[in-house]
Image (spheres, rainbow, N blue to C red):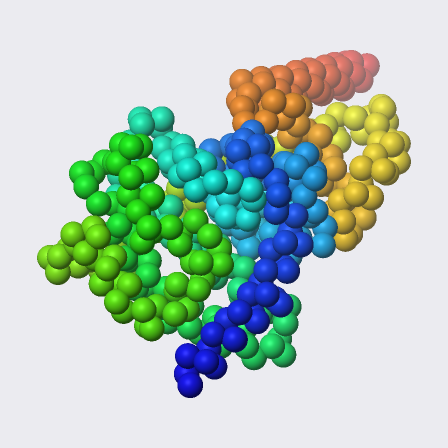
Length: 374
């Protein structure tokens, strides 16, 4: 009876809620390799700004506006300022890989390439764990929980999520063991061989991964077969929570570092902005700039008028300071030179003001001396 009750629930949730939402995101039918290359091209050091996320999705003809709330789940800086936001390229690539058009062979190749960051042609077990975690995070947590939020009265999806959360640790452990079978670090052929084992194939399909996780308890024999197919003994038991804590802590340090670097860039951009306003305020050369940018500003969404102007100005300065016409590569030299030039101009202006002030003092003192003599 339990089997008859749960199976229709799973099928209905997939067919009426999760599946339609995933299709509506716009990835279905698109080429995984092209999408992966697009996200990579618009990213820097594993992160992508809101501006470049919009550009990447636009180029790929993927809708953003109606799903902006969903994409905020990929934002890692937790900044309230729209121009300081950083989105995880790894998670975005995971989403596109799982929802777009690709064979399992292509998915295996893309996964290995994306996580072989240093291009050493090998990946270690900790990297594989991050890979598996990202897939589970997007497929079993992000998508179902977002759909639950959008369907608060749907009790079936709530029950479905409870099952996914209950069994996630077990299925993740089994798949991780299967993928890391053999020597570490893993060469591509070893990784490919492990991925192609029938017991790990569920990892490459959103439907099969959720199904195998939700029904994990009912398929104990399949789990035993998984252990036997990889010759996994009791001595290979691992504490997936401890491993995850370790690798996610390292990952958080990477995110914190990226946030710090981004904050530095934003601070410099704000400094440039302030100097630009100060410099232009004297001759009013750019007094009509906000009007000229009206079309661009209107496309920035529901921000206050002041925020729109500030965002637009900082975006322009940021674009000038970095080579944003060639996404993926930044020009720190251009940025530093621009700051140096502005600082030099500021010093020259200050020096000129001091000289004028001193000249006035000297002139005033001379007049006082002249009056006393008279």
